[in-house]
Length: 67
Image (cartoon, rainbow, N blue to C red; front, top):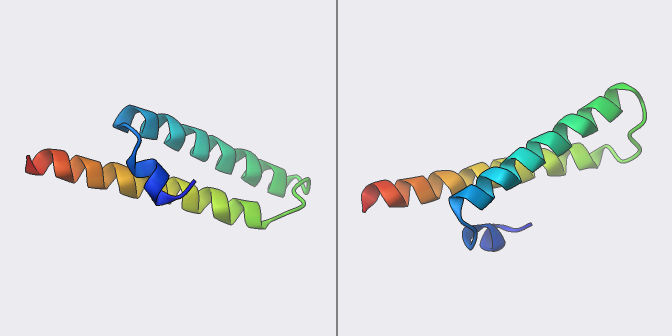
């Protein structure tokens, strides 16, 4: 999911997406620890997805505080 799609979402939807991204990252780390993960690049994309969502949430919070 790219940043433009995330900007259209509400903060509640973003929090749900953040929880899902963190859960996915956890599951991927668990798979990597048990040697079940085939594509290790998925961990990086999951982490970056969570960071992207956090960035958009912080931007929306800053806009709300400025108003």
